[in-house]
Length: 206
Image 1 (cartoon, rainbow, N blue to C red):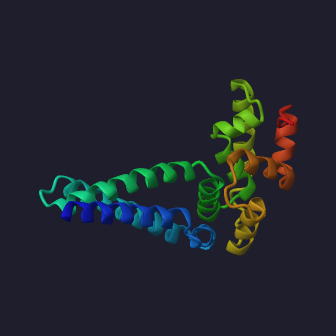
Image 2 (cartoon, rainbow, N blue to C red; image 1 turned 90 degrees about the vertical axis):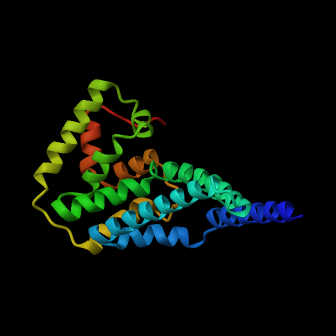
């Protein structure tokens, strides 16, 4: 009876944790909130996240090898939840959010055209290379031109409010925006990126 109770408790806990992960309504707001933060605030959020998951991993490993049954069950449940969560974190790291956060950090610290920072970062993603049908020579050419144009703008500082507005314009109220869709919107909103891609003879797939 005790084992059954522990099993039911563990299964219920896993379902609750998974439900919260899938239905966390504040997740969208949290991502927008991170965009509105300054560089150091975003750094602290990332640091806290890594420490939090590191602590959970350590606890789950200790409890899995515990001789106390209820601790072992909860340790296994935590391990399964963490495996699921880490998979989603990896998936989210390839989304537009990570590109925009990177670009906001660089534009804030070093100045420069925000859209060009986004283009420079997004070009490293396979989805964008596939969108533009980039061959190795074309990839090097467009990346070089974007970096050269970006370097010309580094002395220009843009206000935090304007940077946030440009980031939100690229999202267009979308939550799960992929890198290729982000780059497509970038070519529509930034004449600099459009000119560079046109000069390189690169056009997105229809």
